[in-house]
Length: 196
Length: 327
Image (cartoon, rainbow over all chains, first blue to last red):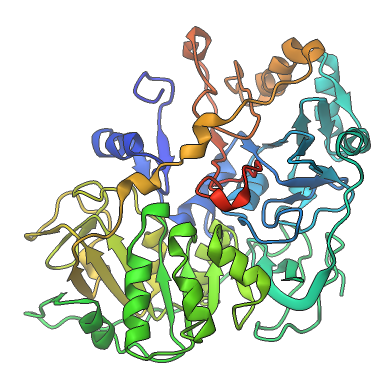
């Protein structure tokens, strides 16, 4: 797409496949950026601040639009933010897309097992059954409605998810803190406890 | 104490610095300071090439308790982290903290070093595979510190995360430490994660399987940041950087009644503010490849956007559950 002229420029902290490696080698407008230029909240302006739109995934989303991409439903670590929280904070429009359920577990839940990305930086949740808009984005909600999109309350999505899978029962976790989840500014957004 | 997203956070966490609770996404921006960098200047005539990893570890005066860093540009094809830790274990060093920008299933051997307390701490933005499972079971002595990619850069630059020795898997390096990611059999492209580490670490070691004459061209990381160069047989398998699972994903589609309007989601929002190219943004498990296809994609548009990529693809262990993320 880049070589077809769809984009004027391309930034990569890293390349995700060998074609991207080749493109970086060949194209001047395919530029490298450091992790700091990409997403460091404390520098003089990161690339994430220039994003008009960011499409993000989720393992779980809760009623406050908090997103978990750190632990699975069973509480076991299976990922982490990467740039998730950085891009959500920087982008003008941060969309989280997910199915309502996966593997027999609901993905829209009361409380996520671990908060990776705070709901205040997420604008809308897009699922196959409708779009829920963060209450802080009233203007976005109205625009989507007038565009004829199925805007629903996030509670409705949670109910639909639970109807498919049954209510989520979390395993009790141990006492010991096995991981701390730092937000991009270094403050603690959550902790992960040992799995029993 | 309860933080701004309603999570109960202990006042003190054993093995972690003093707890600062999250208070809001943009609370701590403003005037900041960067930590000074300590480095060892090179005398004219210094030879940077050392015969092996062990020699580099000696040259960097690696001690018990040190923090060493790695980047994940070779992703699930990386050999360098395991290679360095194997040597560290052989030397009998203990209590090492590993600051790796991400950890993948290929790094499974690290788990063995948890038990022996060769490795007692992990700093990372992403972990999948056996290392993640072991940490969740409590196998690591200190709590793992999980940050964001931007948070890692901030921590390193501010001095919150002080790196004693940074190891850079270098697809090409010359004899005086100039590095690029685009030449050599293990070419992995840009080296943006390593770039932060080399600017702030006390010592920097380039580990390469393509040692070339001075000067390498192009240069992604320059000689003034690199102390030593080690030649090894292979730094990794570049095929391992490819995310296989992405191909098999089904896009999420809104229920049929809403297919057409959904295409307007971004367009409407975008029309006044961003002019975002909206056609066929399928979203779903955020994925890049099929987002802009077909003739519509060629219509003139402008805007900046970003698509999250799924790391969680090197993972037989997750039993096929979809688990999307970003970068």
